[in-house]
Length: 273
Ligand SMILES: [Zn+2]
Figure 1 (cartoon, rainbow, N blue to C red):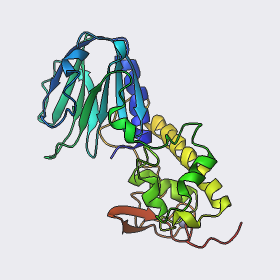
Figure 2: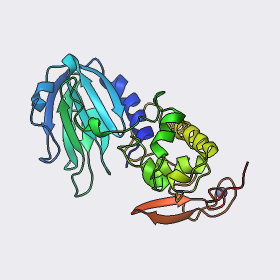
Figure 3: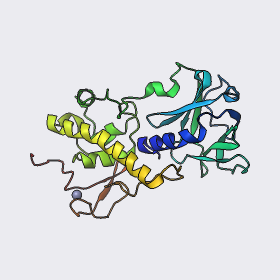
Figure 4: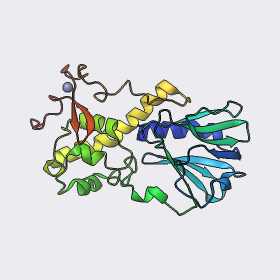
């Protein structure tokens, strides 16, 4: 599933392709896709694309006069950009045609139709109202994290992926952040020392911005069909040697989520220092 770094790169790489162009047409090809009836999606037509934004795991297409199309790619969705003359495949669930002869399409392979869209007027947060802290925002201070963890008898992994607390981190980057912070995914939030909270707070933006830069090195201005994650420390590397200590990365199910971690590097009881 795309997470904050993937969507941030997608946002940046879509911007030069679409901004300044006028929407020529829209086509919804899956009945479950659109979650709003008003404003009607056809209101996008004739408006100029003014930018892209991201909030949590949502990608936002901004058009003139304050209208927005908010997209959630869910598990398998990805964005295609190319000539409108190519016939859409069965996996195309939404297409937006621009006046330069290109389409932006939401593709969802497989039988499930999980990706969703919302057309919103300025000031209407829609699904974004439920989101927690934006982890790359300067407002997300160490105090904010401390407040969020305080008294929570929940495991760190579960806290990091809870979009109502912190928005944009999913299964993969929660594992990466905990590795960078040298904290066990099983640790309970309320047991963290002040020094461990400092470490976790630093690891969150550090890991996400590092991932964005690694993705950009590999993709340049290209879009992607599948997340680029070959550089990760632990997630998706079960059984392979830890790049720090050489111990095989372990995989467990934690709250139904595949969780990869290095037991010695992320020991529950860390020696001081
Ligand atoms: Zn290790």
